[in-house]
Each structure stands twice: as C-alpha cells, then as structure tokens.
Length: 268
Ligand code: SF4
Ligand code: SF4
Ligand code: SF4
Image (spheres, rainbow, N blue to C red):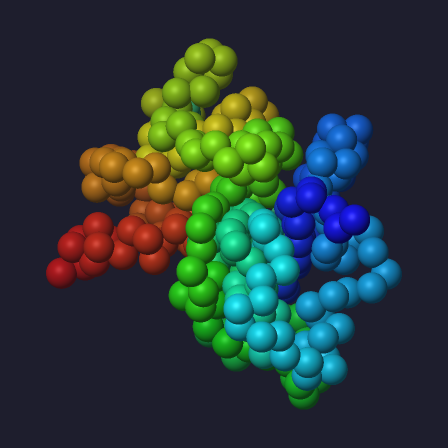
C-alpha cells in the first residue's frame, strides 16, 4: 500500500549547506520528524539524487505531476543546473519553502553584487572556465515561494515548529517582533546605546538574540521585520558611523537591496 505520509524534499542549491546541517544538529528530534514524513530527496542522507540525477539525464516530468507535498530549498540559484533544479522542484511541489538567508535574501553571496564581481571571483578561482558568475538573486525572482524560514543558518527548533504546523495543515505564523525584544528580555547590554552598529530594532526576531549573547551586533540575517521603521534607525546610525560602514554592514546578509528606497532617498 502506498505511504500516506507527506512527501518531503530537502534540496540544496549553491550554498554552504549550513541550513541543512542545522537540521542534523537537532539530533533525535530530527530523526523523529523524519519518521513522520516520506523523504523523497535529501542529498545529505541519500546516495541517489532524484532531481539532480534527472536534470543531468535531461528527463522532464509532466507539469501536472506533483511529487512532493513540501519542498525545502536552501542556497542560491547560481548555476544553470541550480535554476533547472529550482524550476523543476517548483513544478513538482505543492508547497515550496525556502530555508535561510541565501535563499530568501541573497545572503553572503550577494555581497558580490556590490563589488566588482569579475575581480571578486578571481580571489577564489584561478581558472574561470565553466564557472558561473551571475548577479545573485533571491529564489523568489525565479519561482513562487510559499514560505520562508529565516536565518543564517536557520534555527533548527523553528524549522521543527514550522514543519509540524505544515504537516497538520495549520497556518504558519512567525511572530513579527524585532531582535531587540528578545535581546532586552534576556537583559543583554544594548550595543546601539554604546554607539555600536546594531540592526536589531529593524530585524525579525526569533533567534533568541543569539549574537547579542556573545556581545556581537545583529547584522540582520533574519531579514527586515514587517513594518520596521528603517529610516529612523538608519538615520541614527549615520550620525554615529560612516555611510560606508552602514552600507557594508547591510551587504553582509543581503538586506541592502531591501532598503534601497531609504538609502536612495539619502543619496538624492
Ligand atoms: S543561509 Fe547561511 S547557513 Fe544557510 S546556506 Fe546560506 S550561508 Fe549557509
Ligand atoms: S543590542 Fe541591538 S538588538 Fe539588543 S537591544 Fe540594543 S539595538 Fe536591540
Ligand atoms: S541576532 Fe541578528 S544576525 Fe544574529 S542570528 Fe539573530 S537576526 Fe541573525
């Protein structure tokens, strides 16, 4: 008898695979999750690579043939193969959920968009033959995204909460609170008040303000909080730091382009 368990694909495009490893860090909790679903694709635990193998063999799938209830995808669509895999995944999936900052916001690879990308790639590769070097774009530029699990890497516990809601058909809600909310609840010292650059007031919380625990500023890996008063914070930071400092910080996790409106107003 065919399995009634929800069919799940966990797929990685060009990335460090850190978001997938955050799942392994859950240990037994992740094993328990795996028991509730039918894993159709997960390169880190399988020898066979479904979509990737089929793409390489140029096999196509009828557009109405949905194979996965939920697909989770991390990383950036950089190579032509990444793009084919992503589009194929979208066709086959009822819900496509992006995992992490690279997939959702362009992430660390997006820094290249703001630098000379021809020069930047030479820091990594001596021989550029066959190396893709496109402008980095978020996954939702290419396919419809149903949900985003934020972070760099994602928070494993948050993944489990969201995945469990998805499995029982519950509406997924990520509380819209800034990083400052958790930071202050935990009574961490406020770096912004010490005139250090911290983006906490405009960044989506849910990470337990983990960077602030180690007295490191929030650089925004979970993305901009809905309705954030970005202009107010950026104006405050500009009084304390150079424009270059601010813009370089916004480039780290791909949020500079999200704030182009506010930054552009300043440049006019
Ligand atoms: S979001 Fe961070 S951890 Fe996840 S793939 Fe990108 S760089 Fe790696
Ligand atoms: S340190 Fe950063 S995150 Fe914490 S309260 Fe201050 S501005 Fe907010
Ligand atoms: S504190 Fe900021 S940079 Fe650190 S994990 Fe949370 S959202 Fe990401």
